[in-house]
Length: 429
Figure 1 (tube, one colour):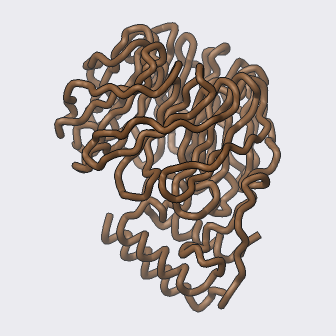
Figure 2 (cartoon, helix red, strand yellow; figure 1 turned 60 degrees about the horizontal axis):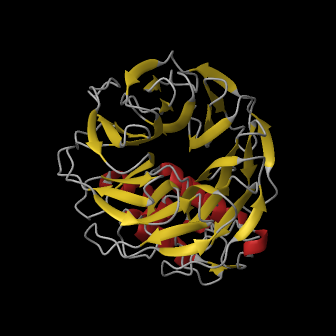
């Protein structure tokens, strides 16, 4: 991967002669950060949404868990942030979550779906063109509400972590390397685990787990022993009915912090990492009514992680912009559909700025809010687009800094170079 990054950086430098000399940037107005929602039909109650390049054409597509129809829906991107009609694939009973990742190691991304009523997972392998093979089922536990993908045992393939809401445990399913999974190994967590996230929390380069325990009012952190087994949980109180947890570097110190949507307390809780997998007491920030999902991304292009929250009880999305130190400004509200259950962040229209997708359960559709703040190419943040932005991007890219992940797919590749170039060429709006 470092050799690949150096090749891409060389291509970036070779393109400098095509860059404009200076363009003036404008600050992003938090009240006008997103266009109004565009709703795409997805019948049968979508309650989970994931973003990824499903058909291999370089742009971000959508996957939905349609709980009332027992299907997973795929909406392919036309390349400009508009989407084709949903194509539905049968899964288990009551799909509650969908996530995207390369499960069989063939270079394209597959789907993992948690079915809360049939107590199992559906794995749908990609045919390579954005269509999917018939599901394969795996036992998970009692009511799998959430699934996350990551290489838990460090063997180079993608494993699964499942939050089993009615089993008070998480199930870990290790990949055999070909997209088949061993039986779940379970670890006890708190009362009614509703969400699980994977990320390196203690700085050892190995992915750990964070679990939101809805009825317990807390978060369980399980640190990886380095081989895909985990130490006993550590619990942190966060608020009433925590329903969603996300991992990201919120204070810019290089380690993974936690953001938690607490459905019963109209707030999001932020827990900053001390650097060793231990967390400070939570700081709380107001949101809309009934926050059910939280996602982390640089929404205003200033290089730090902001928050998007789906508020299921007042049909809004809350955007909380980072002050640059892991504290957050007051929320700004954007309209969503009826009962937004889940939110995801990714660049949907290819302009280099992260957009928002939201699963609206009672609107039977997925909402897309495109980002108006198309000035991420101002990488050094000085208000101008110049040669120095190229150098700043190159430095971040070569260092493996997630800030250089311009296409939002979690990897640093040639597509990030292309997304940066497109954003630079488009200038600042």
